[in-house]
Image 1: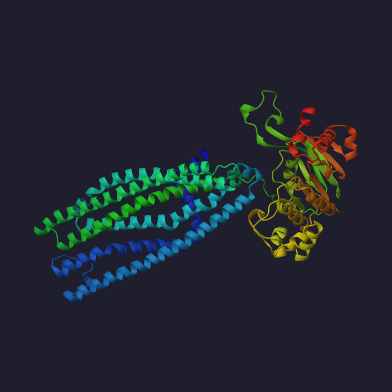
Image 2: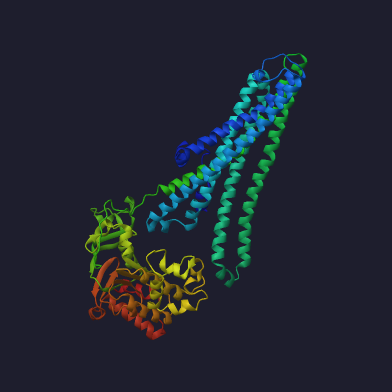
Length: 637
């Protein structure tokens, strides 16, 4: 609930700070924007000139009222000729109005799309630079909304809202100036209903604002509910929750309907009220203006023009009240977008990156790291050391991996194994100490160069929409088709790929939904191998595959680690017994290091892990999952 409210509450209708920042996106297209604004002003002029032409025709040629008009120098004194000239002016004004409307619509739509294209690009580029921890805290749906719905709200403001507001304001100003110039007291009579319209508009705006807030909140709930229940449809059907789920969705859907009904009611009341007040103003013009015509105080043309202006005067007022909601929604969206863009990039590129071309030595030098800084009120009242400021995941970690070594990292859940990999790839920066590759601090290396040296296979394989070949190459231009096929051969997945209807060109659906977990994992191995990395990282890459696939993976591993520095995180100790070195982590510290036989001989944490796993195998036959077997040493140690 709180998340939805945070997402959907509407702020101020206008914030000068936000608007100033938004207008910077129009700066590259300033000439197009100026052209659109000029077209808006000219169109407003064309829209207000019609009633004045009507007045001129009536007073000069139909009733022959003696008066001076600014059009006199261009009009004939012959009635039929003059009326023809005015008719031509009227048609010309309509034609010019069409042209100016086309120009301003096209240019603002074009400019708005360009500006929104730039904004979406900036948001996506910024998202790519943020550290992994940011994505752990922010749901995917919220971030997608920033690029889609929130940008669309700004686009509507740029292409429709702001344009209409400017046009309405210019039309209103033009009408007010002309009416006051023609007859000030009749103009004041026409404007007499404005206070009532203003009060009605304020009430309408308040009601609609609340309804729109509820509508947006309800839409957010519907989207969230749909996403959750479609994703969990198997569990839903398995436990016969279809009816219950339908009833819950019906409640959420009803909230959306009720909110919309309230908005419809507000519109249904407001617009007739404005129409009635507009008609009242016209009636006052007829009554007082007609009486003035009978007394020869006002010309008939002025009264007719005032009736037309009164009709045109209240339409922009109605339109402005509608555009208020667009502007308010855009301000709320811009605030959320700028909050995202202002999120600092914590993992920064070095100013002068160093080039590294070595055999692949990895060194952790007294590394301290924590994901969360402990608030001051939660810290201990002791002497105050660096260890009190952070919730440390790794504590004073030091080890070295030599070129060509295969090193395994083991330990109970939460010991810091995956954190070591995240730091090595610089998804996060350490708080103390240093991580070096070939003697160079990774903070001094360009992030692209650093990660290019690694080939990583994660526990949960991720495939993108595209082809099998695309998922192995991942857009890397220098990988040839032959290298793709050779990598697939080396990891024992080429035979399976060739059985697919289109082979390596076979389409892969979102997240590889048409493939098994084992098949996706083998394709991930082929992806890592095809990029020919100097250092290979396997993060529990065999924990979610079946026994047959694990055998194939082991065979693939033996080929992949040849001539490479390899770091393997594994819960199944059977997969790492041949490692050159095994690092045992416990509560964020390195507790043991050595070969399989050496660690068994020490009868420490590794020996206890080994005994628990093989004892379970004797009892149940299956290799246990991670958590149960690996958490016991925490109490046994």
